[in-house]
Image 1 (cartoon, helix red, strand yellow):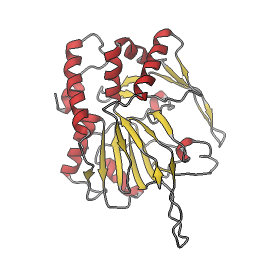
Image 2 (cartoon, one colour):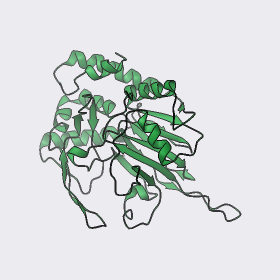
Image 3 (cartoon, one colour):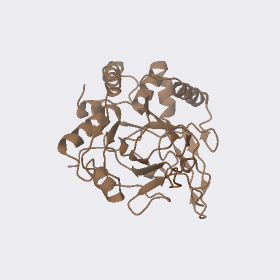
Image 4 (cartoon, one colour):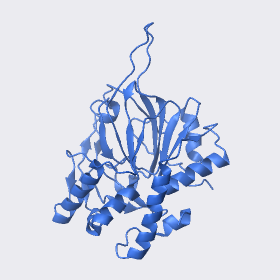
Length: 306
């Protein structure tokens, strides 16, 4: 089992077909093990990646739900947009901090619309998937994170494929997966934005199927404030087990300290970030610039652009 169709043919929500699960499980764990050996895919032209570059990045995303790449080019909105289009990523999320192309600049900021939000601070970020607070019809299925300037120290990401976490949970108890599939498993309360708009309450499962491919997707945050879990013993046990799995040093977790020009193309994998310190100004007083990441999010997964 190593082709795209083979991975998609497995019905992850069928918790009774143990034979199919064991075959898929072995293939996924082997893929994760092999993926840890990969160096970033070299992309010569972000705006026009070659067929071989695109094929390799798609293959890695199919096997591990993420792929690292690197380029010597200075990223810009047009270049990242063209890069994303090569993977069928054409539906950019409308985010309050995004520019006209859907790109959000993640850097330390004191702007009113960003003040108090951890992505715009040097504080560490706990495990989460992007857009876990989005409405059911606005779920995030993929994103690109591109490093323009790394931090002087820290700012390291950990990445874990949600399908690997699914395996860990199912191996412990299929009931944990079943509880996290419930349509009311996790609730994010409404939130008043600085501009007076209100982000509505978001209620949904943790594990759900991608509408296009059937592959497993995940919405999750490890935060303990402004979140409500379904009030039943099964969900509480599943949430506690999930948190325990993420606290362990899983061999499938990958640590990434992105350098300038490097990025992550992915199907909204679980990730976190350590705290960081920005570079000090140069000896001549020149501003060295703080950590800057470009992020653009999508409502569809990485695929071949046909």
